[in-house]
Image (cartoon, rainbow, N blue to C red):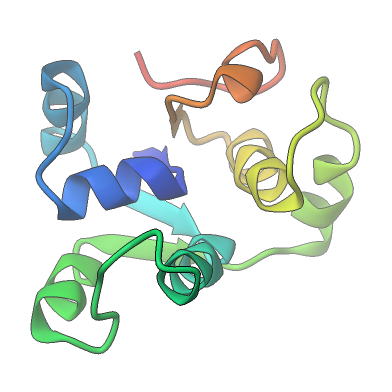
Length: 120
């Protein structure tokens, strides 16, 4: 199982994964934190991403994902991480810590963490 951050999910949808990322994604079941959906909507709103979240292609890609809710444990863990970032990234990382699911990310701040389990 892999937890995808927002930018990896966008790269997956846009077929812009690096070869190692594609290999990892092909062999694992995939999850995202529910805040990733909010981040997508905000990227679209600010003109940084063109994506139709109501379209058939997006709905098809969502069939391969499990969306994990932000639990009390995840919310608490997000404030106890060993790095600081924007709240959405902290919640995504905390989801991996609490659920024990490796995170697939390119984010350098998160990748310096000693607490977050990462996909390898």
